[in-house]
Image (tube, protein in one colour):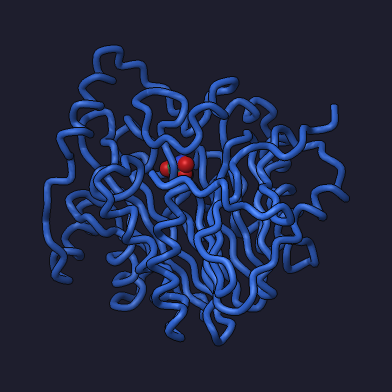
Length: 346
Ligand code: SD4
């Protein structure tokens, strides 16, 4: 995988941190990353390639909605990516089941959950938004709808994913962890899908602002590797894995979806920005909310990424190691380092 961490400018500082007690002033200073004009941001290292596809749309004056769909399709079709789309690791019974949602500047949204056999759930989510009066279709119904809309039925379990699943089955310890294992996480950040290991999952969350200033977002994942059949995380749930308000900004999340759902995380981040908080501060507050309600959540990973209407970007995560990619007309494919830039005050 491409690693552009060496490109980071000194003035642009990564934002993930350990714990939640850092001084507010430092957090605000770190939240000063500001993009200009059309721009796109994405979670994780693979956001770099996703941003390039989105930028191809934005740089021609295209709509943010088209940009985030194009961007999300990149990890969905990447056979080396075992946490999103086609090559995603399966559930513990061996079924690849995908979750995705999309939201536009008008508040229109669409989602699919537990969708099997369709490689581009983000595009099915968009069809749900545009062709039905509904927001979400799940399971067999989502598959039926996708086929009716002309999507191709495919076997998504790749030989690599099958081998990883079979290796996991030898121990068959069902532990619903996502990209987090305290003490080990920093070492494995950026490596996708270590079977049963520290970084068993990363989701693509993407937010874009187009030349008109309109905001859209997309979120797509295969959910946690080896999940219970039928388990759905935060990623396809509007307000949890993704939320956009064109007056305010947008937010998306990654990590253990159950904690994000319990706190309606992305909606919370956008509402905090509406109250005047910076994207960074809003993401930090959402993380703190999770930890306050459930202190044992410090052992898992949850990260938020947000952008406001002015193009200011912020992010915060429980664990270090959360990376994200930024792109605008000045700097493209900039990957902020996924390491703590300072330690939490004790
Ligand atoms: C889920 N939030 O299914 C997703 C997983 C993820 O980084 O984002 N991992 O819970």
